[in-house]
Length: 333
Image (cartoon, rainbow, N blue to C red; front, side):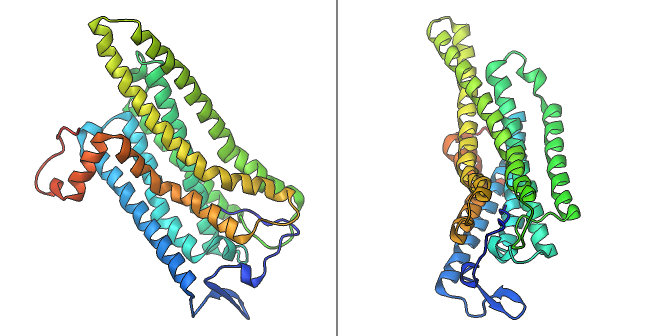
């Protein structure tokens, strides 16, 4: 995702990108790339490959192993789908049509890049919102959790999430919105694009998720105090289940926390950009843009670190063991 330029914002040819140069028609990829350019593209290429492979491991694990067929994991599967599409589609488009190069072009490819960028970012945010709702019922209302959050409900959530995201992406192309331009713009357009958009697509969902996880934390703390004050065996059994739910909630809260850490700097930048006389330096815009995209690479590592069953599933997939027989019903530890 990229910010709109302010009225006074200008970029020189040297600010465009280390891999671009100017000619009579505009800005093109350089025919003599520097070492910095080569290293940048190698790094971004490795980032893309890692994102794709890591999220494919999550997708295959949840799809193949029946032990992982749970409503929560289906939401994680949907999030991994958004992340793998970022690696397959958004990363290559962003490598070829970078933020700053799209500031000087309003062609179809830049609009397609914007479309996928915004729609997949929206899909990730909506999936995280649904995950927070799932965790709320699992921890705060455990007796009604299985009736309120079942497979059918989760499927509806996922379809609505992707429907909204696709609609937003299509509207960007049809309506002709472009997140970057060097032409002078009405101040109202700048405010609408740089303030209202982030508030509705990022800040509002983020505040809702933070409130939900705060409520979960308070309820979980009460549950711990209640468990410590009882000793009967039946309560211990229930305590084990509650402990597992709290661990899952903690892990998914970390996923959301990492997401916010990756996304917040960029959205703060574009919100305050209209208020500044000079736009942020190009390296800052590029770095924050790739920081938001790198979030798609981090989630599989979080799952592998905190979940023993994901680690077991990853090992079986990477070693090729699942190709040697039917292990779908295997017990993952």
